[in-house]
Length: 74
Image 1 (cartoon, rainbow, N blue to C red):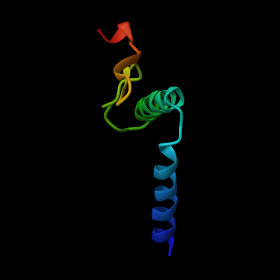
Image 2 (image 1 turned 120 degrees about the vertical axis):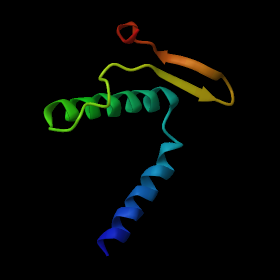
Image 3 (image 1 turned 90 degrees about the vertical axis):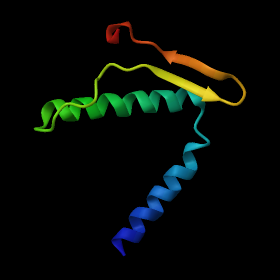
Image 4 (image 1 turned 45 degrees about the vertical axis):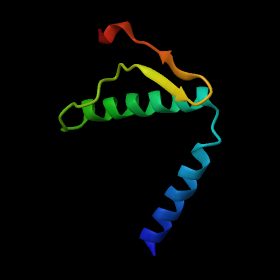
């Protein structure tokens, strides 16, 4: 029962992602990366994710676009 509920929630979430505007989708991706990096810094896990990130968007209409380019990474 619990596993079914989890899959149902994940399915609804994944369906709703296609309706999020591109700029908010990029912000969401950036925040997920940032939160994962912070989680790894405060836990005993090995750090695999950097808090700094580049964010790009690929769409059929506009092709490849840089949304956020972080010079600190280079």
